[in-house]
Length: 111
Image (tube, one colour):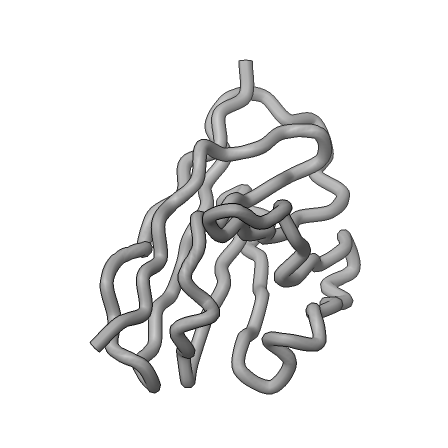
């Protein structure tokens, strides 16, 4: 059984930074895509960033230039570095690898 565990969320002031991590445990033979999505209260889950198996990233327009997604294949881990955070970035952030999803980590941007 595969579990994805996110970490790194929390409360940060506007303009601050956070680094989210997501590690997979269990048996995943080959991880293709890895990514981060988020869901704010009352809104649908939306893409933040994804990275494919050759390391090519893709970002939502709302986070371009502020976020960087990276992966460590040896550790089955994906990261999301978020800078210049805004109040509208407040959401539960979920990682995904292949068909698996984590349980989410809360990011709150507030003064």
